[in-house]
Image (tube, rainbow, N blue to C red; front, side, top):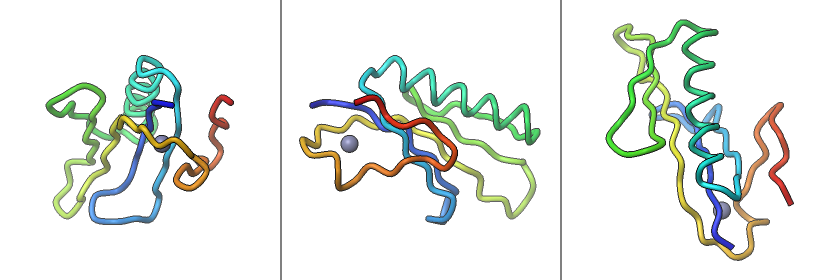
Length: 95
Ligand SMILES: [Zn+2]
């Protein structure tokens, strides 16, 4: 079944990787936007929308900060058991 992942990771790192799954693209886009806005509010980071829907680049703007990327990705994987990771402190995906 088609679904959508909201993926967040630090540029150039695999640490701090988040992956949240949604059945609806609209909900995934909302979650990505909310997450980006939350990071900017809490940590005072700058959010820049990238080309295309559901892609955000977040940075402190300091030299040497590679920044973080939040993106919504389509996924057609039939069996999702193998590649979905629950986010730390996040919601379980529906279903
Ligand atoms: Zn998937």
